[in-house]
Image (cartoon, rainbow, N blue to C red; front, side, top):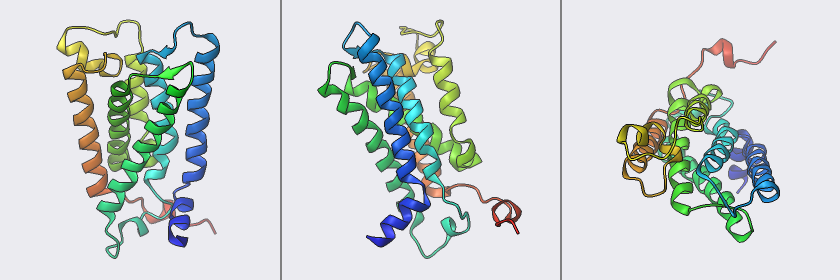
Amino acid sequence: MRFLRLYLRSRRVPLALATATAAITGVWALCLVYSDTPTIDAKGVSLTVMLAVAALAPTLGGADDALDQTASINWPTRRAGHLLLVATAIVALLLLSTLTDARFAPVGLVLRNTAGLLGLAALGAALFGTARSWIAPLTWTLVSVLPLVHASPEVSMQILGWLVQPAGTTAATTCAAVLGVTGLLAYALRGCPRHPAAETAPDR
């Protein structure tokens, strides 16, 4: 139990989780007050998931790059578990809204968008580090909420705008699944890149 507390603190999980909860609650409250429909649309879901992913993405790496690569710990399993728990936390926070008059729904849309955006963040963390892991999810989300991107029968639009396609759209679901699995494997197997010693060493 002590190790778990130290691990969560080293990854700044309490702060990140509080930030993600605040972001989700803020969007939910705005929709509850100003929206005329009980279900938050796909663009609203996408923006909310992106905010939660951006808040929790920094927890994918620790303060010591070398420690996160030590051979004495089964890091691939731990990283995969960490990523899956992050996904579970985001989905659970979003689905709590189904108990209220403004809800993030349907469930399939929430699951798909969380898997895809978190996969993008994990891939970014594996390639560029946690400091830049939020860039890809933010960019794709902003593109998807543009007026020219919408639900469409065209496969190319379904892939480009997979975030805003109806739940159950095959191409959009496949795209999200590929991003999710790719990000999971890249992050679990590779972890975050090591920074030069000068970047991680404490100032003197």
